[in-house]
Amino acid sequence: MKIIVVGTGFVGLPHAAVLAEAGHEVHAYDIDPNKIAAYKSGERSKIEYYVNEPGLYEAIQETHGRYLFFTESISDLIEEADIFFMCINTPPNRDGSTNLLYYLNAAHELAELLAKRETKDRIVLVNKSTVPVGTARQLEQILSEHGVPNFGVASNPEFLAQGNAINGSRRPDRVVVGADTEEDFQLLRRAYSQFVNHVRIKYVETTPETAEAIKYMGNTLLLTYISFWNGVGARVAESLPNVRMEDLKLGVTADNRISTWGSYVSNGAGGSCFGKDIQSLIYQLNQSGCSTDLLQAVYNINEYQKTYMIDRAVHEKGFNFNQKIVTILGLAFKKRTNDMRDSAALKAVEALLSKGVKEIRAYDPLAMQAAQEYWFNPEKNHLFERITYHETAQEALRGSDAVYISTDWEEFRGLSRTIDKSVKPPYLIIDGRRMIPDYQTLVEKGYDFLAVGGPLLTPENISPHSNNGIVAETVPELETQS
Ligand code: UGA
Image (cartoon, rainbow, N blue to C red; front, side):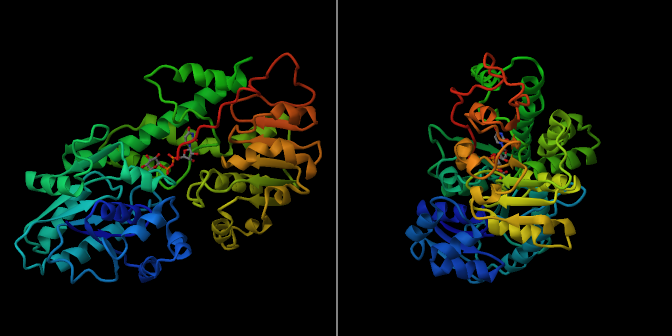
């Protein structure tokens, strides 16, 4: 099949590469010519500057020039194309609604082009972006208004997690296709022939609106589950006596009906999707006059969690952040990415600055450049000048009064072995990811230790007979989703 992918970001580029691997002739187009030039160059660093996903570069290398092509213009391709995949970013508006400006602009431009099509063959425009329920119908209207002949619209949301986009595209849990006619379903079945009738992949065919809703339901349910562990599970282990977080998690998730994914407690879920999607669903339901109490509570719990550990340090330890130097380890929203969108670190830094800290010493293995692009902007907030950037965790720790672990990078698990080379007690360690297994060593050395999902531990209150809510030796490999 001849397929055109419009939009070559995190969704479009891996999608185009994997369709090309399946033997389709795929032309990837982007409104930004710099991106196309970077992809055409075939250079790893240039490609990864835009989308950094394991296996992506290799997939492009394998298919580029044979099945996968990058193009600055699609006007010459429209006659023979069978399918257009729209992979356009849909950022949030201030009121939580979805900003469809880029999406609708692209739809109008495409409609103008497609109206000139002379062939009688059917073409299907498939939406992969996360868009409000009813957007495919809006697209249909735009195409009709422009007089596009013989077209169909479909909704085919993506369910990829960052860091796993290529694997996830090659072997998804499910493929959801919403369309109106058998002809359009058939075209999509040809595009996804490797997934249709696959024994482990659910291939769901439904209405465009249901497909759009499945994406919102999926993401808000995942966030609800994470928020249950953060808002209830962590609180139980922090405040009720002698409850061990790891055992609690193990025992509860032993029930086959309950997921282990989402059960690791943290300083809140971030990223470009969860917060944006739940707000958009709240907005859509409110517009329809529905009450959204549960969703609103989930959203609030998750947002609160991002600064909650800082509040705990004040209330439980009596830590006064004013004029203190605080190290923050991990800035991206999760490990193995440099993406800082909606990262818990952003809120934590703002909370620390509002408490009057003198300096924030920041370190992340991958996100330093992204962090500087975000914070090196005194217009946003002049207090951001108090953030300094460091090349290693050791370096970032030097001279500080407290450390806050914000992202679940594996390297931070070894903190207890190295911390005393940089800072001496009295010193507060705040573990927002509950990832330091041998915390006891730290407390024995005199450090104060506060982890999400456990009580405050100090050299004064730690008892040799109690594990104080944390299991030192049997902490399982930190389970994270990627
Ligand atoms: C998420 C969903 O997992 C995907 O299914 C969905 O397709 C995607 O959004 C999207 O809509 O595009 P992603 O944002 O890449 O994917 O990241 P996740 O790995 O799901 O993590 C989200 C956040 O939740 C991270 O901050 C992570 O650290 C946090 N998290 C995850 C927890 O705090 N606890 C957990 O147990 C799991």
